[in-house]
Length: 357
Ligand SMILES: [Mn+2]
Image (cartoon, rainbow, N blue to C red):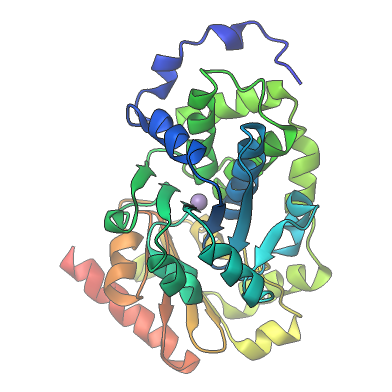
């Protein structure tokens, strides 16, 4: 598919690239990729739309350069994203440990997307850390673990890893996306759309430019929107209702709200990975609430999601109290305490953090 709008051709590349990529990033990336013989593309545990979108977009783009690659993810991605992996190319480590290990061990280039600390790939960490393969990072989170990588392409001023990857690919293509495969275009769009929660968070000026070019390329935004945002089960909607009606706790004096979901509740609503996507944002719709948290009980830990709609840094908050990290307004983490103690722990930590600031 080709752009039918002549204007897209005349936007000077150097102008668009300003601020998105460091000089030479694209050249260096190209060089490393072209000299590799066995490439593995990785993303983080609990892959979301940006994670899955970026790995699939990159694999399909690399194939146009004659570079074959394999994708490994630590554990399953949400069902509503299956259409991106329609050929079943993605190797899920928790399901196929041996083949995932074999692929990583034989790699001479590992490309990490949408995470920037190797601990984010859990059990795969030692294998990747000890691998003698060259390692490239492409990511949009703050404070990357630079020492672990040979080439770091990192920028926090983009909506998503997919957006950063879009600018990288565009640069490699001398400023035009005409030649990128439709699968790449579609996957990049999905990653951006999900990471911005459908154009509501961390949308930058460049995000609209990227969307503009992808739509001209032929991306069918309505179909993608339906597939991603209207692909949930009835139980998921009931769980959302239960969370809002019975579980959301609001602390007006702290400007905060939170939801705790226990394992038995998740079982009751036949919870599938990805079902709680977006729940953490819900308290922020209440007047005066600018900090929110979602806690979900897992087998061995409590999963923590944190959001802020003002300058309260949930990245710092998570690093201090929740064994995690992330962006200034969106972060994750883990707790290793009984679920009954989570509410009190959160409220106390938040009071301390607000007093300290
Ligand atoms: Mn992301």
